[in-house]
Length: 217
Ligand code: DX5
Ligand code: ZN
Image 1 (cartoon, rainbow, N blue to C red):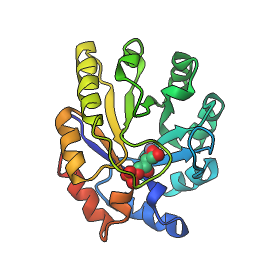
Image 2 (cartoon, rainbow, N blue to C red; image 1 turned 60 degrees about the horizontal axis):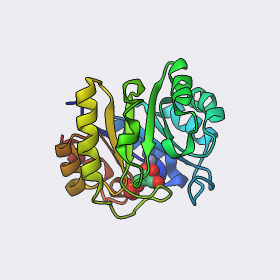
Image 3 (cartoon, helix red, strand yellow; image 1 turned 135 degrees about the vertical axis):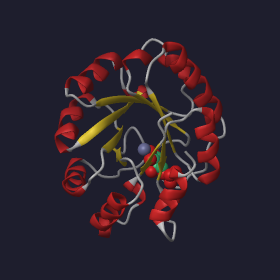
Image 4 (cartoon, rainbow, N blue to C red; image 1 turned 120 degrees about the horizontal axis):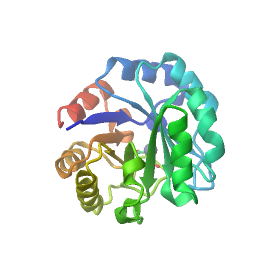
């Protein structure tokens, strides 16, 4: 099974972002996770299109863009232009989710839906065959460094059953509170992609920490 690591630059050093991206380029990281927050959908503001564009100029890995914003439809094309390879929208922010997913795919990039911790995976039954990935939040979105919500393991396992029954190749990504312990269990339950922010960037040796996560696979 495909198992990937996507460090989140939300916890990078914004005074030395280029240096941190170079570190990710050289590391075992598979993707670079970009957390976009609008201060409305989530109680925090992070960074936007110009920063993603700047990262894309030097990144040698696909940009995995997680939109924690209301009304994502009008920002899908600009983020694709900025360099996104994967765009994730929140289930809770999309009234016409199927249309939004089609809009992402029409641009020739991968489409993904994120569920907040309280949103049941069963709500994806009628759209799972259209998705390239589902992102399960294992913390309430908005901040790095929060405590992992244990119920996520059950959600991963239920989602894994749904995807396998459907015969789809949809990936499962998990975001929030990932470390070696939670990461190991998430892979065991059937997750494919682990996002890690503070665990990687607060470590003394971020590149070695990425390697350790990668070795869980
Ligand atoms: C949370 C973001 C996450 C965050 C994860 O709202 O979506 O990607 O950066 O941070 P850690 O790994 O520190 O929980
Ligand atoms: Zn994220």
